[in-house]
Length: 336
Image (spheres, rainbow, N blue to C red):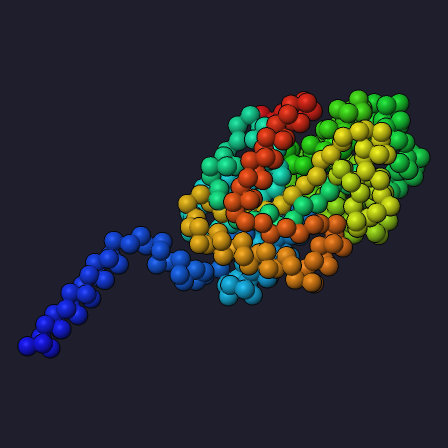
């Protein structure tokens, strides 16, 4: 008799567990196994720029740690908005991520009249990957021809020759664009802005002589500074870069107190992505950023690794949106 009762008890317990499993959200069961297929990291700019470089530094480490391929997918255009919108409208299942920037998640909300996504509501912050200064660079041959060897020289020439210089950027609304707009506003000079679909193609034309100056992210500009193709004048950060300690800040070299326009890059997921997945991504990303080989590479590029928590990154994004809104307004920059 006891064995029959015990058998019934097992059946009841088993049935209860099955019933409980049936009502649990499917995402809870999926999370335990995530990832079971390749994960896409959308880079909202063309290959060759700092966003692309940092994504390609991080992706192999996430691949090793999580056992599935993390694949880079470049979707450039509209100051990063095209790639950001793709991710914002993707399922929150952990298989589509964005390497966001100060442009997509700091500047663009104030710069664009119609932003196709909400940088706060449409994303789950994962982690700030790295921060970098921008650097004011000019085609070295052109700089020599015009006798421009410093920020002060550049300002003097631009004021004496209004409209003769043009400024390349990685796209409307990027920190590269806005740093240049801020420089124009603070110095009172005029330059024609030429937006590209990322730093890679913008740098190619700058080196080729099609454009004159750029306020590029330091990591993507560094190889061309070292090769002598580009002449570096100053960094746009509040303090000098440890990677190029002899290079002054724009504030110093241009006598422009308070000038600052630095960049940052971080991993984000679509809204609805489970917290367990975001936390796992953050933990593995933070570990990767502390690997000696990764830290050495980032330092050589002029980038400062981070790896903060999703909550910290979310608060940082909120503060950046608040910070850049008045800067955009003061610069006069606006994109329809």
